[in-house]
Amino acid sequence: MALRIVLFRGSKLPGGDRLVLRFLRIYITLFSRKFSRYKWCLLFSTHWGDLIQTNQLLNFDDPEYTESELASIKKWEDSCRAKGVHSALAVTTNYTRMWLENSKVSSTFSVIPQGHGNSKIEITSKADTSILKIVYASPYIHMDTDAHGNHINWNATTLLREIWPLVDKGIFELHLIGDVGVNARRYIQSPNIILHGLKSIEECAEILKSCDIGLYPRTKDNYRQAQKISEYIGCILAIVTFDLVDTSLVKELEVGISVSTVREFADALIHLYNNRKVLEHLRRNSLNSSEDLSWKFLGSELDRFLVENPS
Image 1 (cartoon, rainbow, N blue to C red):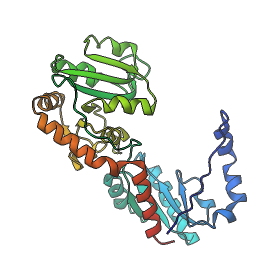
Image 2 (tube, one colour):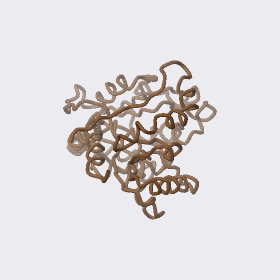
Image 3 (cartoon, helix red, strand yellow):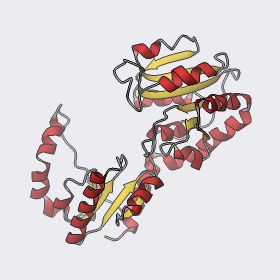
Image 4 (cartoon, rainbow, N blue to C red):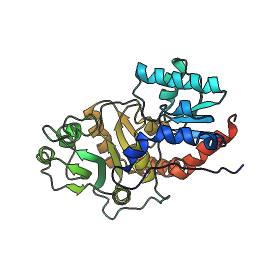
């Protein structure tokens, strides 16, 4: 069965999207009959679902797990039911699906993880095997009074102040991709720390591919799925992470080591340095999983979900 996808997007002019959003309800109302000819509508918010007279799939990838959020979803479901159309939710983790099911959300579910845009690559042997390249990518790598020093995801205190001092600087090369704050730089004294700065998605991927181990040193669990993990897998890296719902793919796909403490994090890195067969096994698992996490494959999974569900 062929699918015809119609995308509605805003203007490329600066600020144009805000203008489009302001008049979106009017636009949907004016063209509601045309929209009703399509089998499904993909929503990124429940705000306009009541205006659409066709089956609706809600993309729900950044849940806050609040009562108000749940109430909004149930109201949207009631609206779909009253119109006699089908409601479905696309989530990224089984944790989110279970929370919704336990909260008596009745829509059909599709669990589709976060993906990556890298082409399939092979594991390449490094010229210098005496040093392992470990990498952390984040828009901001800040600490203390840096602009994002208190951000739950962009605070790099755990990595730079706690983990890095516990590893032998002579056997690891730490690559940091992102904006490194002034205060964070005070903890970067080792010549084995390479600062790449903020890079485009494509440039970031090229740096990741040249490394061995991807780091996820964030301790805050948002109970979502971190796209960074999929990006690491797409670049064929082994991963060392704290054991979180955000990083559940690491354990599910056996592509890395999940730990509970800072000491265990450092020990995991040292273990992979001393046990290259384990390292290569984890990277091989990333290679084997990378294709199924590509956006192309995940898009086809979403297509299949829509085709197989009632319409």
